[in-house]
Length: 526
Image (cartoon, rainbow, N blue to C red; front, top):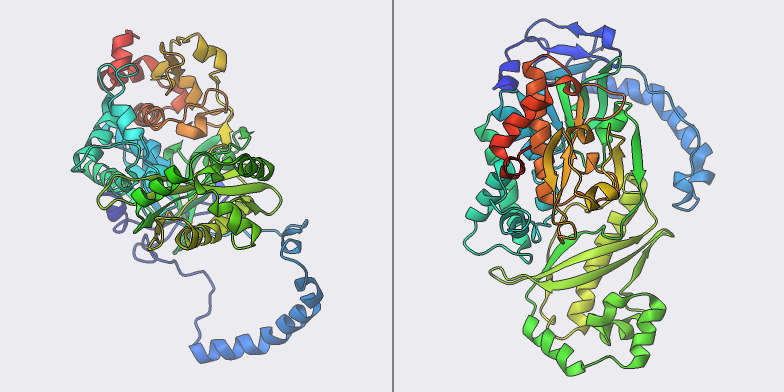
């Protein structure tokens, strides 16, 4: 494979200035290894320690002493910084040259990478987390996505086709039970199938790595900088597909993006073991309808979710033991819901729900949310165990390592599909897949045009999934995201094949390929 082959090639150095490409002799700095810096002195550990002590200890001590009054402020004061520092330029080792680089290993990115690789492109997926699948993988939120995509005769009378259909069917085939909305355990299968299908097409993966910048030449995106345990590294590419879910790569490349408002469905998934769900349901039945006083209390506290935890939640709240609705600083509220998973053994499936005015693209806000969620989840499990019938022996079983959030950034694409387009089942000459509303409000479906995947102002770049979806018609269902990824992957491969930019490909050729993959396009006769 090309990454392994790279170890036998010359190791290259990249800088943020395109004109400064340089090379080093073979063996001087292999891919995946740290390159020696020019002019660096090599000292023994003792000598280095002596020099550091003699040159830095006193200035650092003086600086800390001078800053002490400021450091004694509140935690919020810590973030009230208005100045900036200059980041010095540096040479960055190039670890790979690829045809197509997919940023983001969620289900849309995985399908995009598989499609690009199957149609001849040397492909690499860069993923922030250590496993693939996004909110269907490490986030543990499979939900009813597989079931809806594979068993929705109104939207897919011929079945979900192409790579998305193959992917979903392989996930289901790996389970010894029916798949439905309760089976959050399927996230392991999602991550496994994603990795397996990428391996089968010789697509490479770089996990636990964050895209921190984009290599540009004029208005063309020609690779990315990544940060991981090895430090800063560069990957050159001919086409980039932004599947980050929040158009992070497009924004770093200088493409115009739109900040989307928050949506109250942000949250983290977790599971509780050793609960007696039957006893819990019996206690709710014996309780009967809530007294008006309890209903008024819930209304006053703005916590309708507390209905299934009453009267125990109110009692805990009033004695100061636990608040069923928590706050995240001054910008969001936090609560939790429960349902029973029918897996073996049965677990109580739960999720937090974050409501408020926050931006999912704000790193500090999302950090504060994650911090509060972890504390809340642990204390919520303790509340159940100590107060709610059926949970006396319950314990926290697993918590997803990441928070799912709707909203964030999306590209300003060449064409934006509107609510009116969806309502009138719009048809476009450059259609690459079809969007069906998950509730079938618009059973005719709406075309998703190729132009929707093309950001303004930057060449060499495509976007798929949430990165390409404006908040309007929320084309964020997993099967829609996967179909968009399939179209973007094939388009990227065609751009590489013909040595053109994605905006210059023959859309008719792209559609011809997609017709062989997507029975819905073929049925429509596009």
